[in-house]
Image (cartoon, rainbow, N blue to C red):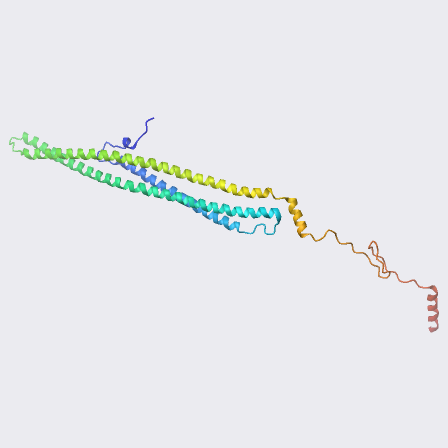
Length: 304
């Protein structure tokens, strides 16, 4: 299939029209705007990465498992360490993105300067072409009028018409047509050159943007790989986390004794003996002798 090119499809039947050229310039301006939008997008993404990195770095400094011990503590310490490393990798990613955005900005400015010279040249040609076309059409109008006047005069009986004016205008008109033809040829040549340069710029722009976005995505993919590699270190540490070992470590480090307290036993106040079972007993009054009771009564009676 034959490739299409700017120089073959942006003409117009109107000699003074710039519609084809204007369409190309609009396309180039839209492309420049796209470059700026992609540049801004990458800068904004870099800011997001930088903010995320700083928050991760702050998070890695927070207390996490301070009171934990042994293998689980080592895993938690590794989690904080690798979180810090991930934050640093995101900071580097943000820097790389800004560098790519700067390259795009420089590319955009370089194309802008290259376009500027050609556009100035084409604008001058367009003005010259329009001016000469107007001059040519004006001389044609005057020439046509002189010819009509001459025809009318030739039909007049007096035949006093000055034919010198007609010939002068005819010559002037022919000169203007010749000059316009030369300007047209020069404009066509420059228009073709401009189309070729602008098409080349468009090809370069599309290719540059395509590669820039591709690189941007590669950077994001690499960040995922880097983060996963760092997180893998945490997973390896977790694999070494031994639950029973941590339990035994705590027991050996903080044990307080291997025997429970003995039970509290009951102590009889009178016997001074300790109840082997610790069960409570009732306190009984001492027994009273029968004779002692009767004597007490005998002693009491005389008083009545």
